[in-house]
Image (cartoon, rainbow, N blue to C red; front, top):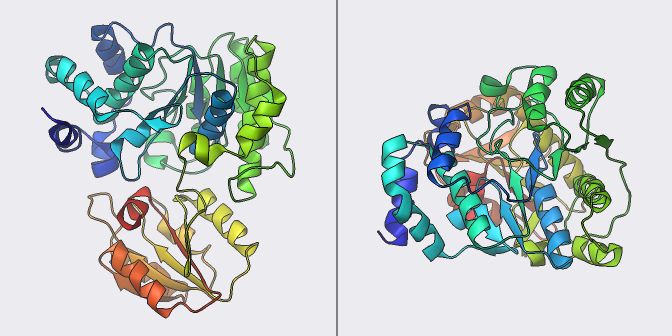
Length: 403
């Protein structure tokens, strides 16, 4: 099997949440334990940082990776989903793993996969652990896929657990209240292992406090720092940087050597050190185009707060999203004065244009519709004038189609 056939196998023959959504979701840890056992438990002995949360996991993970890379560590990074290339999910020192490593892992273990029938994400998780172990990573930063308690990544004993924030998302899996969702995310808290939390309220803090107390885990709350120098755009990245710095302070308390000067440098080199993109990311200057992966209510709310801080004449929004998102609530957040270009993508998970159209009409938005993201962006570019701003958001799938 060559690389292309391996990718075809992973995406078209395995249960894949990114492609089909809920039908691919396999909660529970028995399957991943069985798979890892057949692979000689590569996660055991691997030093890790484990992250869960509704928003900010990807940014915080990459910030942490940048800091540790700048301090001389060999750092594995496992995140999801990817935008263009499957290997974005598994990086070492900011570089995509080689195609050959993907081919070797699947080829060597396909008999095991055929026997156990794991999901796409379970194979990805096992692949990341195996490669990080074989490549002698000093530490690996592991982002949950969905939730925490029953997520396939929740088999590790990390150096520190990190919970970014709690918002309403994936309610069909995690529950419909902040308390229920926080309980699922708090599932990554381990006995006698420190945990750091980012944003919280009284409702979610009580969940984290009780779980940490029960497991004798040191609970740290992030102090929000201001005016952090970073190459990442957006005020929300100040929060993610603050959370990363709090996490780094815990590592230092536990014996990791991390230099403050190198850490400050790392904050200004996140994109360079880790090849990070897709979060308030300016991809064109004339016309000015910004892409962002925000896809749930809290993420979109934060996005428009950031957009308000930018200078522009008129706002053009290219938007498409998944069918499991609360479109009726999300579209209420859209500014009335902007022009909208609604689109969909080629996946079972795509929200249909008709649904977007009906919600847009209900909110008196100025919009047009397109069957392909590229056509939507092309139209926005054609009518935009000097000084205008185009933003593309709503789904990683939309970003995949236009960059």
